[in-house]
Length: 262
Image (cartoon, rainbow, N blue to C red; front, side, top):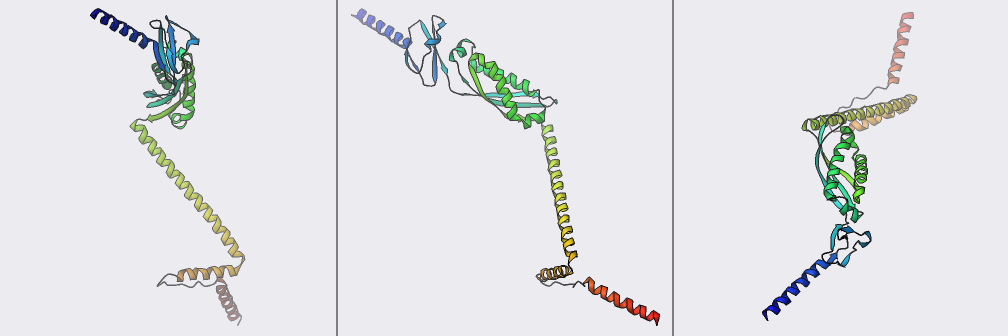
């Protein structure tokens, strides 16, 4: 009796092992690459759902097709103008060909990370610091194109490469801060000079208009008096019209001429 029970237990264990080896669940975002006796049949790519394998003959590797975010660690780069900086980036990629990603590279994630690091150093070393700071988007597009060409044989598609952070030496940061401050001062002086120039032009135009009409000058005098009178305890000095002064000078001149003839 005990022998029969042991036999049943053995058979049940064997059936359980066969079921475990046979049944696989492939998720919606996965694909299953099946090796049958060491060979891959491209037509036997397992789609999402419950899949049955031949025990001890089939071996399946699941491949994630979702977009993967790869954080490239900071790389020390010497720019074209001999400035040492540290740059890190982020790479977005996904597997387009599950079979190639399994049979053509041992670890596509690690391989993509290493090719991104070396490409980042090589490309940034061809640009000056000002270009790296000002043209991140264009450099990122160049990185994406080069990395994508390298990973295409692995069935990996690189969609985006973004430069996240650029760490500058302390001396370079101080120099750039001084340069930015000097640039702001220059712009402020240019704006102030432009304002003075425009104000002088307007004053010149106003003076020309007032010169054409004597009454306009008198009205301007009266307006000035009204503005001064608004303040409390103010001393007002009445301006003497220039025409009155000219009249007095004419009278004095005629009297002196008469005295001389007399």
